[in-house]
Length: 180
Image 1 (cartoon, rainbow, N blue to C red):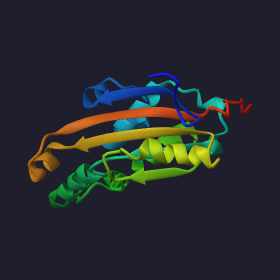
Image 2: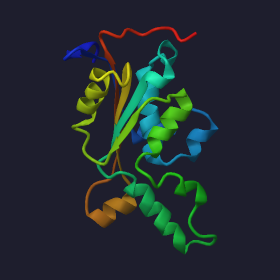
Image 3: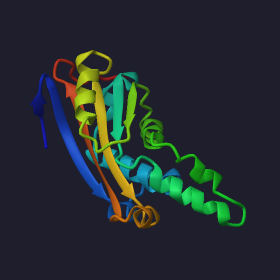
């Protein structure tokens, strides 16, 4: 999807990834320590191929939604209570639904506004559009990521899921500018 207009906002690029894409991803040593929710979100953003150097980092927003939030990671962390040594302190870092936003922000040095929704993601582009319309940001990375681990699927009685989509929106009145 390229250059789709919506009230002065342009969706310049979009991407989709699945759990199968994570195994072949090479995004540094930090990537392997992340939970699946963060890995998928970051991988979807990487697949966009956006040159973030064209934008002031404090003027890029991130809006993320996840239907189950961090519940799959929370369940894995909880299972660790019965293991020798207890739950993993590394996994604890990812027991917040907003953890993927932090990973995206760290990797790309994005310091603009961010929003996290525990939902199906229908509001993500609308919220991003509002941030841009109000002038709070010049561009926005939108991510919808769904992870339902086998442990969580068993508990919920539903299917396993691992997928993410991302898009990059910008205000058509605010073209990219070098931050040199």
